[in-house]
Length: 253
Image 1 (tube, rainbow, N blue to C red):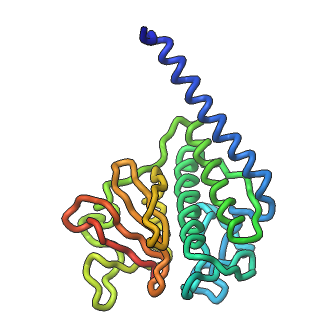
Image 2: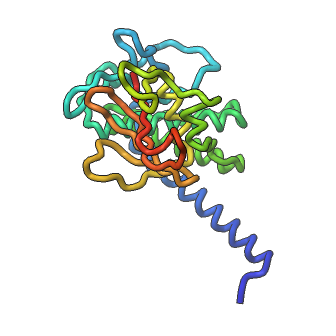
Image 3: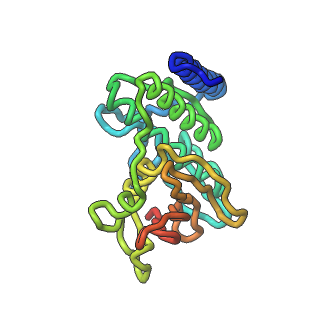
């Protein structure tokens, strides 16, 4: 015998409350671990000699503070400057750091569109994994607040609209690369990741892929990896479009 309409509404309400409680519990657990990093503290802009490091600069109205740290690629891994100290990173850590920061910024921005005074609880970190956890904590807090506001994650798409806004390719074609291989500035690349990450979930990637795959709600799949020669790169893995299809890629300059 099926549930009545009122019983089904009550069941859905209970499931929603349970999901929210689980998210809040995860946030509380993370907040106990993360002690030394304030994701609201600004960074020196990329391009400076100490770009990516924390600074005392303030000011309101700019983009949410979670961010990735600029780094020069090196074979087998990279180096990220966190809190004034250089840390060796694996390609996977670099991807996770940039992806987690982009997701945190995107969700924070969406919350603040509806609740301008909302701020995430600051978290602390002292190394690369700590920075990743801090970004994840900020994203989780923002996701919980969106649920409280009865709002959804800001999913954009389809992917051809992201990679070809107004019918024009993003970034530039560098050297002898084809139109399907684009290069973007660090700031532009960060905006691209912010657009791609909301609603995306991690899916298994093949062992030879030097990064992570993510599936968007429409079923399309993209990968984020660290290229030895081009730095952090976004690959279109699965998408049915004449131009923005499998093999389309964007490098960070």
